[in-house]
View 1: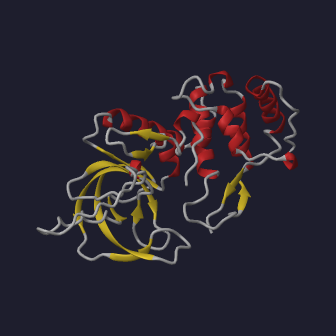
View 2: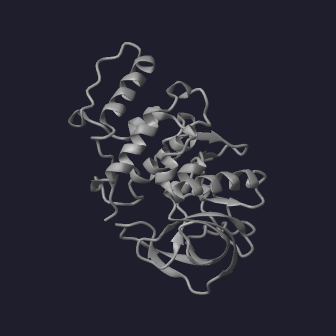
Length: 292
């Protein structure tokens, strides 16, 4: 499951109430979606292939499922894509139950009003922003969550698209973005890179292998976190939280992280963390999870 490094108010595991009493996993922030996707495009589904493909939905899964394949005609390539025609594999939701015949008893199976992980049923004509992940052993991409598709009919589409473009542009040249004169751009880039490096792949092996990222990039990320305004953490849900970014590093005593006991954690911890970042930016190497 994905982890969120932005405001604690935006945690993926947060549940929000819907009018129909359903509970739905809250959407990940757009910067995280951009960071974790292999490909981000804006386009339209122009066809559904006639043949289905039997494939495992996740790595290391012994169970295979019949998957449909939709064809996306991409109008705007924002990240990762080299061609305008992209295959999207998906498992359609099951058909609704047939109505009972006259005289038959009606059996109601309740799910408790919960639909936390709705399945996407892609149709010809669907226009959207697609956040895609390469399937681990098939020649198509998949979406990992319902919120990895932002449909054009969404009232916030234009605003969301502008944010996607901004994030994709920052990741296109990450070293330059980490050295931007704009502190918010530096921190946003650091957050997206940490999301990419410190998120284990869905369905991957437990305790995945880790390896250090390039030294200069690691240094710039740590400096961006250290120099940010930690006082906004928790007050503004739209802002990246440097506190959560620091926690995502996964530091231990072996890394030289030996903080003293805090009487007031929220007040005393940030300056200690910032000092560690400044002192160790040139020495510590951020570790990334490796897909095997």
